[in-house]
Length: 64
Picture 1: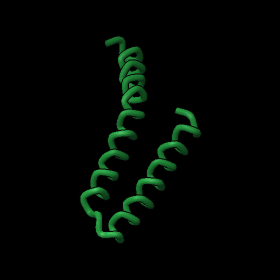
Picture 2: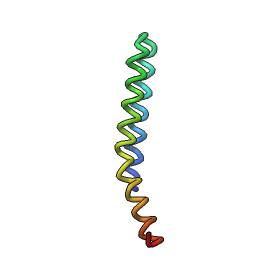
Picture 3: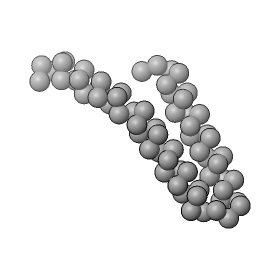
Picture 4: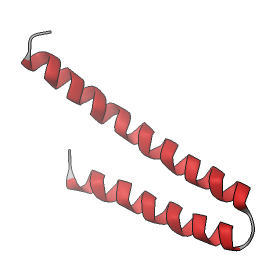
């Protein structure tokens, strides 16, 4: 896993946190929740290939 990948995830987290704070303070709680959910989904979609590589490496290591 590259350090740049970790920075991308952190940047998404910071952007989502700022948007969430702005939307909550303006009284748009539903949109704030949807923004947070969208951020979580984006990060999970980025992590799925990494998790797949981890399982492939583990199966190659143990000859499964």
